[in-house]
Amino acid sequence: MSKARPVKRESRSKAEQRAETLNQILDAAEALFSKHGLHGVTLRDVALREDGRAEITITPTYSGCPAMAVITLDIERAMEAAGFPDAVVRTVLAPAWTTDWLTPTAHRKLTEAGIAPPRRGPPACPQCGSTATETISEFGATACKALHRCLSCREPFEAFKCH
Image (cartoon, rainbow, N blue to C red; front, top):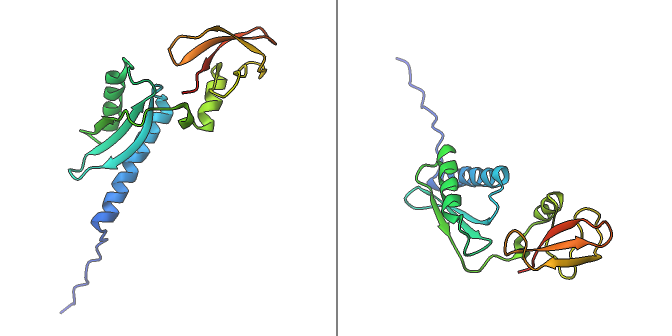
């Protein structure tokens, strides 16, 4: 008579399973934001709800952004493609978005795109770096940017306003 060997089961606690799922949701959300940029919103939080659904919390850079419905739908579709159907996208307006939330990477990417990142004092020209600039218009293509001209290289550029 042979003795049956006990089957080793990898037992993970619910907390460990939940943490792994949350990491997968976070990875999917971060990939979405870094790959697609999703300009106009900031990823505030990623959570796994008690009902097992992913919850993505975002804040628009402009509270009256007309593209929020489309951005929300894009996030929902991307999360579904990443294996998280029925993800909940929550928009939070308070505290309001501020340019202080822009990361050094965001500042670099703005400069590379020809847009001066926000700063106290005159904006630095994204082409040559000079702060010898003049304001052409208080508003650029969007209300959060102003149109400037560099007095050194004479190139026009948009600059993010501090807010």
